[in-house]
Length: 266
Picture 1 (cartoon, rainbow, N blue to C red):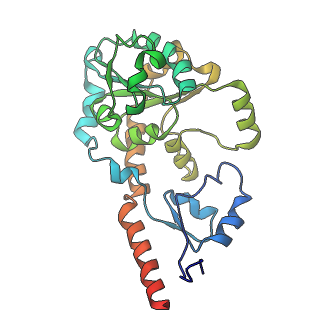
Picture 2: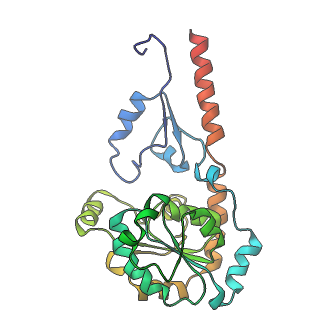
Picture 3: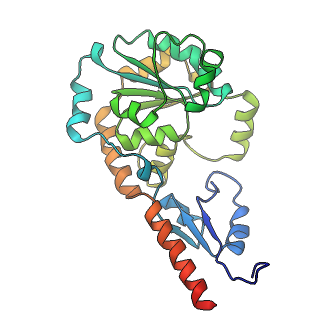
């Protein structure tokens, strides 16, 4: 009961990433919440009370590449390809990746898109430096849908690209101390969420990942030239089936059931 003497179920939505670290939080969460609403199917391997309700990105993304559009990426002439660059949203990510992305962009003759979060657009010159080689946009899903390929800093955008069907390479550079701490505590083969899902499902990686000293214009362009499109598109279909649906409607049903149960108990 709360202070108003009303019995209310406690629901935890979007569970913490205990599959990466801090598994000791599991019994605390399960003891203090009545229902656990998960957005990742493999959360059930860690939480007994977990219910998969779907992933919110599948509520937000409205436009996906179809089979014909995916095939056109493979067949399109190189000088006509549209390439997107997503260097992250934090200052530290941007300042580490933008010089490399600028150099990398010189290898492409078609349209080059730079995705900038809306909250960073007022500080474009300060954070990103020279952006004259790029078309600057703020709508990431639209840019990814339009693009034939993308280079992306680790984050939600990697899963967006995978679900939309845009081939991409992950590039991530962090402070050395942050990487050291992560390696001490985090036990994962990959850092991109789409690849982590493939790992838990027993699949090979969806996209290449370049970390720290591996991140160079030369390495990223070489990986682009060697990119395997068919395995990527096959895993895109797998991921859509794996996540299946958005979470909004199922979460609303869970909240409604909880509310009805409370009314019954009154």
